[in-house]
Image (cartoon, rainbow, N blue to C red; front, side, top):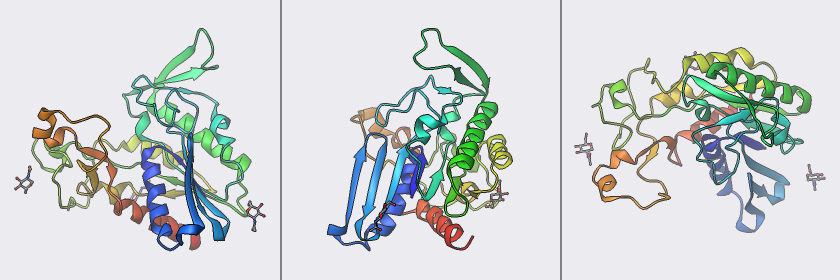
Length: 272
Ligand SMILES: *[C@@H]1O[C@H](CO)[C@@H](O)[C@H](O)[C@H]1NC(C)=O
Ligand SMILES: *[C@@H]1O[C@H](CO)[C@@H](O)[C@H](O)[C@H]1NC(C)=O
Ligand SMILES: *[C@@H]1O[C@H](CO)[C@@H](O)[C@H](O)[C@H]1NC(C)=O
């Protein structure tokens, strides 16, 4: 089984490993990382659960598994096999891709190669760039996954909670110090693009199973890692005085919400 995508999909992967590993004795499991690939092995079951870093699914300038804090993002058209060759042979694959596309209304697409001296880069509406990637993914699935004996999932967008004003909070409020979910059943946040969700729905077809986790996660402003995450740089006194300036309102605590995503996956896998 392999999860392919960005750090949110990595979170779901880690959730799955945590759900399983307590049932497996120490000598019968291992976890190793090889560049973009992390592999959890359940030895007695001859099974692996893996995560492969590809935040756009296609080749991009953000593909380094460690150094990928790039704001000027470029994705190469027609490049799914660059990563796809590392997914061949899996029985269950779980894709996601969303957040990395959200840098503005347009997105840069490379025609040709990243090695070209003069790069042919065109700027297109983000929805068009995203649709191109989704279609590539579906084509890869049709070519490489046998619907008789494999399963393919796509996890919908994971919402962020940076804009407290959208749920009736103060202007500078975000997920920091939130201890209750949003109660409005119709709540939707502007960080979750409905037009991208529409593209996803339009492009996905059998045999890809859509894991629709967006609405149920939108309520959970209380479930993010917030200030309780590893800090890569020491915090400044100014930050420490205002914890909402460094709260992570994108990723999720574990155990937590993403276990629910995997419960949903479990149901769709075994009771299709
Ligand atoms: C373990 O899985 C591999 C890859 O699917 C397969 O080639 C091998 O025969 C399996 N071994 C056992 C003991 O089932
Ligand atoms: C956290 O929220 C509670 C309840 O809304 C409030 O009383 C408290 O002052 C907040 N704490 C911080 C550190 O902002
Ligand atoms: C996703 O699920 C929500 C309910 O949680 C539903 O309202 C919405 O229509 C679904 N969206 C899609 C695209 O299926």
